[in-house]
Length: 74
Image (cartoon, rainbow, N blue to C red; front, side):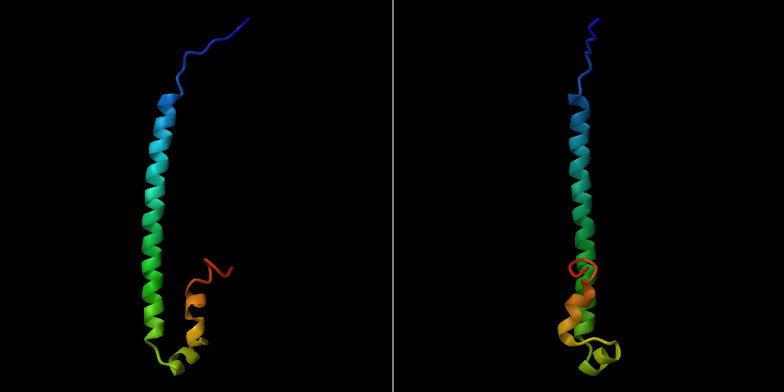
C-alpha cells in the first residue's frame, strides 16, 4: 500500500527563513551593543594613569586583552 502526502513544506520554510533573518539581525544588534560597551571600558581604562592601571594589576598594553578576554583569548 502506498501513502501519498499533499502537504506543502514551502509554507513552513518561508517562516523559517524569516525567523532566521530576524534572528541574525537581533544577533547583530547584541554584538553592536556589546562592542560599544567594551569600547567604553577600553576608553575608561586608557584614561587611567599607569599607576592606576598598576593598582588594578594591568599594564597599558594589556587593556584590550583584558576587556576582550572572553572573546578572543579563551
